[in-house]
Length: 264
Image (cartoon, rainbow, N blue to C red; front, side, top):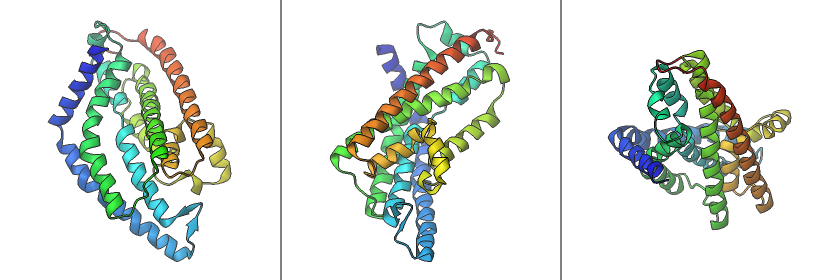
């Protein structure tokens, strides 16, 4: 366990080196939120309705603010790292060490993302509350939100890990990685709440893992779910993590057979 904690510290130190990326987000995130604000303000004013698909205008702005914060936490580059390590044969170095790559990379990203909490999440959270009047969850829902967020981080990571392992067969997956990021953001409710989609789409979405990486944590924060429903969602997140972890291990065993020291 100590060696994985050391990896997390290494990830944090690496983030400090590339901290300019986080500084830019301090400016780009509020601008994005401003765009959402005026866009949806026009939509609400034009429709003449105070509630659209269960969202008041303040609640919807809170939704987008929390969505961006969740995105900071769940963002993962494990697919990119797998592609790089497999194509160039760097994975050999990990296989020769008494560590498991899936855990090593997760801890590295956890340390890397910790700086995101300090430089991205906290400023955006304060801006959302002070300027955009973002909804503040009660303490009980706040705790449930962070539990759900932690599970969403793991689930999103496993999805990225599975996509990354396609490198063993395809060699280069930069296009697939981009498609995965856009598709996951769309299907998880990152661009627009899933409540705005047709009922059939929402029904299918419940049986897919994507909404549990963003839409569910956000709805818990906004207190749109009862306590019982929130615990049910947490349970489903755990189930999906178990399923994705099982699939990831099966694919890894098959992918390992295709790997050589020089790559694929």
